[in-house]
Image (tube, rainbow, N blue to C red; front, side, top):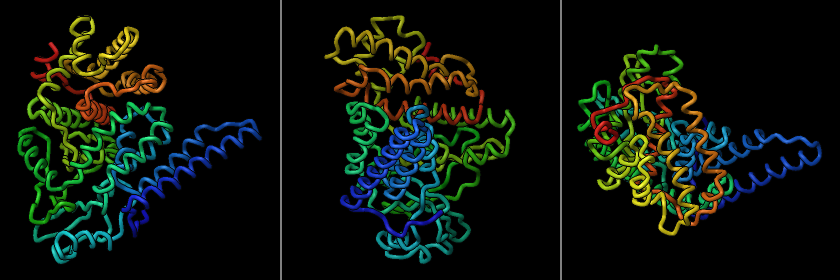
Amino acid sequence: MKEQDKIYSSRAQRTGKFLKTGAKVGANYLKHYSKKLVTGESNDAELQEANANDVYDALSNLKGSALKVAQMLSMDQGLLPQAYTQKFAQAQYSAPPLSYPLVVKTFQQYFSKNPLEIFEDFSRQSVAAASIGQVHRAKKGDLDLAVKVQYPGVANSISSDLKMVRPVVGAMFNISQAEINHYLAEVEGRLMEETDYHLELERGLRICKECAHIEGLKFPQYYPEYSAERVLTMDWMSGLHLDKFLETNPDQETRNRIGQVIWDFYDYQIHHLKEVHADPHPGNFLFEADGSVGVIDFGCIKVLPPKFYERYFQIMRPAIEQDKEEFLSLLYDLEFLLKSDSQEEVEHFQAVYADVLGLLGRPFFEEEFDFADKSYFEEIYGLADVYQNDKMIRKAKAGRGPKDAIYLNRTYFGLYNMLHLLKAKIKTRSAVDQLFLA
């Protein structure tokens, strides 16, 4: 993959690049409708693919939060057209990398040394590149290391990038501005944390220690002496990313074992630690033939406030909507319903959220759940139609639901999607689940 020898770090440069992309997308639409006018033919898939390519190429060169949002949207299966989902998924671990001189510049800034003055060996080319940083392989004595280097200017451009992305996301994907603002306000806070590698090192050390008892999980050791605000050094972890692992055609027993490890990891974090690794895309995990799973990124952690945690799992109880008084009270507590809602809106959103919450919580309601079930995921993907075509949602003047639910819901959807790709059948009822969902 071609390396970038420069990074667009100033607001003017990034805005200019984004505007050029908008012009390309406009030209694609003009070409599409001109062809339709002349020939009478219309190929929407071709239009979406052209737009997805142009938008991804621009965002992958800009790096940072705009590309991160694209990556996040690609995980929300069914929200975007297929062309965008497939293209944006590349941001998980195969974005265009930065050239070696830019990496050296970062090391000079934080260590006053180049990489080969710190490590005995350091790969000039990155071995993986995502939205916020890229990874190089290094050696130090007997240590085999992974060194994550953040792209220059990413932290300083988060707010301005999200302002640029806001109207484009709404126009292209038919999402109301109220919902976008609600979503991006929470995203900005998590992205600021994700660019702080000191914080990631601290969280990685803590969560690795807390979850060390879960059989089948593997974590890297971190090295503070070779880390800085924008550089993070840890053990090199063996294993394959999910797509490559599935190409080895693992048997069902191995798929189930891996699925159980991942489920137990998330279940323990959510219900015992009250904080969760909230970036469950395949690029953050490494899979082995023996059924073990390596976790390699703790940049995005969502802390669950006690009151939100309690209310969230109360409303996830099976058939909660049948207790109309309690269900209504919880909807107001969690701001799915607003005090300004008309009676028509209350009745409408009450029905919508009963369906959505019942669907999301379904795996909790059974002793075992088969994530290979296509019909279940067709229902989940169908949620996009609800949000894109619901007139009341489209006209909303305020975002609905607690901001704390944004990353937790995203965590569950990402987790479900990984388990679906694995086609894993696992035990999904823990003791804590039973306490809340009885």
